[in-house]
Amino acid sequence: MLQEFKTFAVKGNMIDLAVGVIIGAAFSKIVDSLVQDLIMPPIGLLLGGLDFSNYYIPLHNQAYGLPLAEVKKAGAVLAYGNFLTVLLNFIILAFIIFQMVRVVNRLRAEPKVAEAPTPPSEEIMLLRDIRDSLKR
Image (cartoon, rainbow, N blue to C red; front, side, top):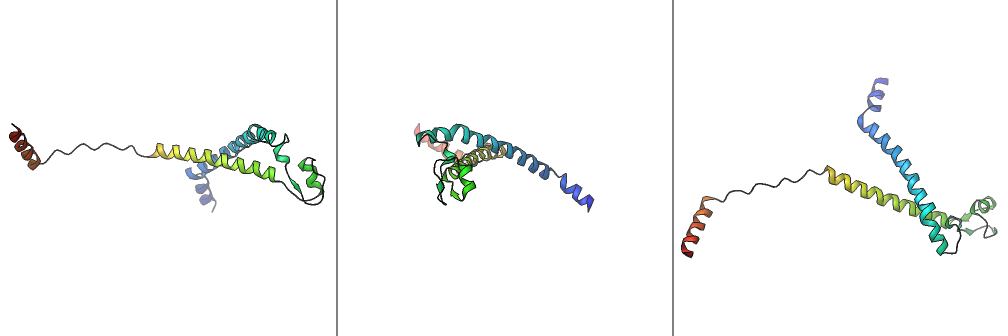
């Protein structure tokens, strides 16, 4: 059983998957920072100047206007701003991954080799000769 596990663990696909997961986690952090630090602040400014992740609807008569973390301690809230931030993260990440897959698929596609034109048949050549003779 140990030998089977060793064979499974060192297969190329398993190692590729592990590398992909690690790079994906790091890339996810980059996209998360992009959304939270560069995209959402201007959107929050347009919508009232608050941190967009702090938009919520209190469900247990909590005071509105406090930071989301404090309000959550007092009870449940609908944190729609935080949800929209995570949703935007997902959309950006999915779009970037889609673009990466498109590029990889293009690189993997075998280049189309132009086929050499087939020489015309003898009948076609004969008909062309007759046509050219009639034109003269």
